[in-house]
Length: 329
Image (cartoon, rainbow, N blue to C red):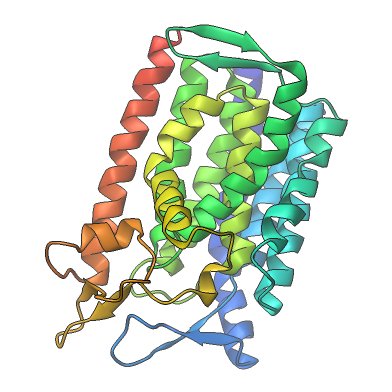
């Protein structure tokens, strides 16, 4: 454990300060080139820089490469490559809105480094019930899990600060879980994700100065999914982001097809004082945000805090689950 401390401090510092320092330059560069979008939940129709994926990928990849220099193991290399490929998918989708199936299929191919480098354990661990050996089935699970995680975090990126804030909470919780089960190396990787997203949240929080875009939100989700796989904490990781999973399930079950979320009718409208309220349109998708404002309208900031409360609750459940699974998997 002692030999991990200095590399961990260096990698975490690089993850945080790279994103924290680079993001303002990304904002200015995007604004200078008029690469901005309307913040639809602001009365003034504020223009916000998008996407912020560049600063996120630089911070994450730099920190992971540092860890790989200290500990040249296949698990870290697999996450580095998978993350980079996922970022490319996100950038393509940021530049041109692709069809609904583009991201899931493209992200499925991004899982190749994990499979080719053998950076996974085919024993799937469950609390109380122990582990289940599913060698061939687990390979399919990896292929599905990467796009699911990427799109799950991307689908919750609908309000100022939510995607970065939510993944920060989930990543800190998952880091704690990994340390509980004594998987220290992967726990450090997860802390790099947590501090990268925390640094980005500084600029993404309400009122946003920059949006992560698909390249940022997908990168967050794919790194999180990769950590879950190489750390053999798939179930725990899913529990930690349960609100986002529920949001994706509600969305897909209501639209009944794989579709680009930007092409779907907005499930919320605005009151005269610019609070968000659920739309009366029957064909609008059901989402977590729509459920939160079903009883009464809330401000964008209030909804964000409600989602964070759910994230904290899920994170606590994940930590309890890690204790239930014992000190080793």
